[in-house]
Image (cartoon, rainbow, N blue to C red; front, top):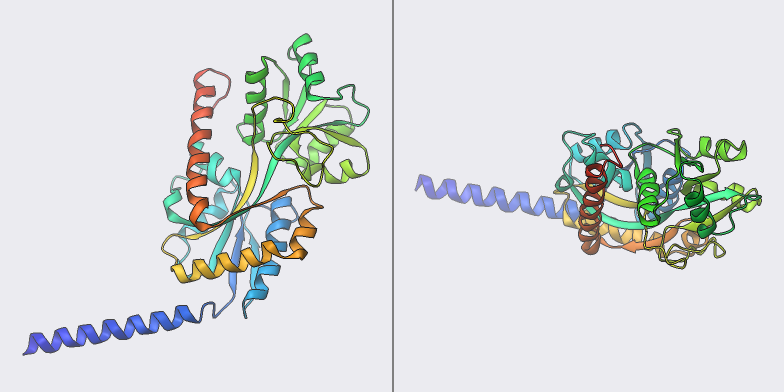
Length: 327
């Protein structure tokens, strides 16, 4: 009799807990939602995340606020996201470095993509080659021919050694049998701009969005974008696909939550961001910042992220083995 009563009490408690949990989730969200941006304030990723989040907030009766946690090529912020409570009240933005550079270079010992639930990919931002407006290089093929004529003489500004942009120029060299003089500017796009304006380098490898102000005023030109899709902001800049070069690489923004975040919260967040993504306000705004709106929902984005990371890991490992790149 005692055992039966105990079992009944346990069952009653479980049902009560389930009911309370269901009610809580049905009311989600009940408090403000924190959005981790693993990069500094004022950068391209920060601006896009803040814009989209501000619009997404309209779907809820609570605030959504961005918090910049920079360091370790996004590793610091991603570490905090992975260890956050999986209740739907902490989410974050991931970029190429968060999904590729950090795990490949073992920059975060506790890194495990399975600690995250991906919500959606919202943008893609291909890398591109930018030259001074007065440069003799009118096409990517002009640049390739010049590099073949003078191996190691053409100076190319990249950002971090071992990062995505470094990989892009190494892949271009491999594909075209060329050699460039690679100059690293770890501070990001700002020192790259200074370098090309002061003639420290001949070309810069970055994104068109990073150089948007100089592109708009005609100080620099986009030579090619490493993509198979035309950038709507810069229709005059050809893609590598247009130029017959099989090389597509760039960054992206993916929203994610800690693993085990309730599906009801994930669904609500995905719907809020999809509504924001589809809004005229966001589409008109993003058309002027040099990135491509590129939505993948939660059902598709995880497989895409796994395939992308696996492919890039293989390519980088091969370059290391060939002595072209160091890890």
